[in-house]
Every structure is written in C-alpha cells, then in structure tokens.
Length: 471
Image (cartoon, rainbow, N blue to C red; front, side):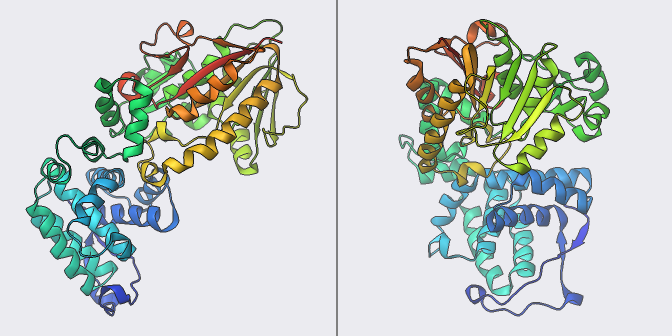
C-alpha cells in the first residue's frame, strides 16, 4: 500500500548524533513513499511545534493530493503512531542502548513510525524496515539509517503487539491494560474510577482508540433533509444529530452555508441539557460562559424560544471571533470578550447559564490522539481550581430560580463529580437529575449527573450536571 512517488521536501543538516553525514545533492535525493512521508511530517509537526494532528493532517492531504487509498494509509499511520506512542516507546526502550530522550527527535519519530507498522499493522517486516530506513536516510542521514535499520529488525524479531505486551508486562501486571490499549496508566486509573466497575474499563479504553464518526448538527435545516443531503443517518440521541459513515463534511451544502455544522452528538446533548432543565420564573436571557469556538452557542441560538437573548463570552479575542462566525446571521445575540471568573455583567443577570469549562480534554482522545501523551496527571489540579472558580461565577451569574449546566469533555472525577459535589451542598443550590431529562439515552446516569461514553453512546466522553440556584 504505497503512494505515487513524491520527492522528499526536507532540508537535512549535519547532526552530531547521527554520524555527521553530509546531505545528498538535490539531484540525487531519493524518491520516497508519499503516504509514509506525510505520516512522518505529521509526527514531526506534533513533536517539534506542538501541532494538532487533526488540523495538520487534513492540510497536508489537501496540499499533496494523495490518492484516496494512500491518504487513508497516511491517516492510519499518523493517528495510529501518535495514539500508540507510549506502547511503542516501551518497546523501543528495551532495544535502544541509551534513553530515548537522548535520541535525535526526528530519529525517534521515525523509529515509532516503523515500529507501529510492524507491531500493529503487521506490514511485512522488510517493507516496514526498508521504507523507514529510506525515510531516515533522506531526512536525517546515512548514519542514523543504520541505527533505525538495526532497531527495527529487532522489533520485527520480537513479534506483534500481543507478543510485545506479554514480554513487557506479565498478565497480572497493572500496566498491561495501559500497554494493550495505548493509554497512560493514570488515564486507565481515571477511567476505572469514573466507571466504577472493572467490567467496562477495557471496552471504554478500546473504544477510545477507534476513529470517531463525523457528526453533524442540523441547526437551521430539517434533520431529515440533512440526512438525505449528506447520505448519513439520524443520530440516536440528539434530535438534531446526523452521523456520517464517511466523506468530507465540508462538501455538504448545508455545512457550507452554515445551516448545519460539524458537532459531536455528545456536545449537542450537553447544550440541550441546559434547554431541557425546568425553570422557575422568566426565561429570556441565556449565557454561554466559555463559548469558544462556538459550537454549543450555535446550537443554543438555533433552538432557543423566540424572545430569548443569548450572550456568548470568551476571554480570548481569537476564540470570540470564532464564536461570532458560529453565530453569524443570528438575531438577538451578543458576543463578549471577558474573563468569566471576573465577568463584566452584574450578578443574577441570566436565567440559564452554560459553563463548558476548560478541562484536560480526556473525553475527546479519539479525535486528538496525541493529547493522551501530552497531558499528565499534574495537569488536573490547576484545571480543577479554575473549574471551581468558574462554577462559582456561573452560580453568581444566574438569578434565583435559574439553572446552570456544568459541562466538561472529560470523565475524570476531579474535573467532574468532585467539582459539582463541592457546591451541591450549598443551601442555595439544588441538583437537578440528568437522566429523567434524557429518557431516550440509556446508561447516561452518573448518580444525579450525566456521563456519556464512546463505548456506550458513540460520542465523546462528556460530563453533564444541572444546578438550580434556589435563592
């Protein structure tokens, strides 16, 4: 499965860690495999400048115009290698004589790319080794290609993923599940804590490794019409959701016009939770408190009753600009740039408040495969502190009798249940159970709160809680 020949577009440099080889002349630069080169360029962008693969890869595919089969292979290689980084590094650590951190970064990315093909894709060893060595020779130099050749041959001798996992972790070892599902151990522990039972943990983690479907939201178009137009099918949970089996959503006419948009069905339910909560008193002023990039604000604007004014706020101007784009053409909306922990509106200004709080993003790992290795357990506490401050501000922003929806794209207990439990005991706060508002969604209840899961619902792992301010 190789791509049409494409010339390598990399400038090489002398590297003391790779034999100090001089680059070949442009006339003699070798022809490289387009799919593998594209996958490598994604890995390089992620590791060298913290790029997001889900943004970089589509850009490269458009620029290089790979054949569909090769584009699919490049996607599988890039996302698969990023997702499996921890397991791949565990394999490589046993085969490289010095710490991986001391390797040239480009060489490490190339080793990961080759190892993934051998242990996960079962690409014939000679093809995986030869193509990766050719990439290494062109990108880094001849000296480094010898190291890559030797290490990948050892990888191939060790067998496939099952053989390597068995060699790295005994059956009773707690790290085996982390290795076999490509998650850091701390995330495995967090999933187990959130699910409450071991029986679902492996299924949840494996679902986290599957490529997600594209979901559309029918904002200003009939859902049945969007189904017919897109060739998708109606989503099972949100009355506005359409799930696509494939294809480019940007080619759907209603998406191009703004009548529909790309939005995970779980995110749709998070916005709809706010609208379904029973309210005491008037219902005329809604707030999306941390609105960027604007997906939930766009849905709220589309489904609100006549006469409801929507305010959407974000602290960053560039994110507020995205919100303005999502709300283009909507009447009676206001987009503000403000820090929601110290907002510029008076207390008690709103009837309904959506707080989609900044979080670790662990609930969307399917879409951002590199995030599981960028985040650490140490990231949780500072975010939890911010989430607590934002929730206090949200409760101050809603009037007595009004409702706050607290949402995170993470199931981690410290970002979800612990945050809401801390305010649920206040004498001016009442928890509204989520499950009765979504009788069509099985398995959503997490106590009185709500939790969506990829393996249960085919959505991102969104957490939902509803709080009414009583006085």
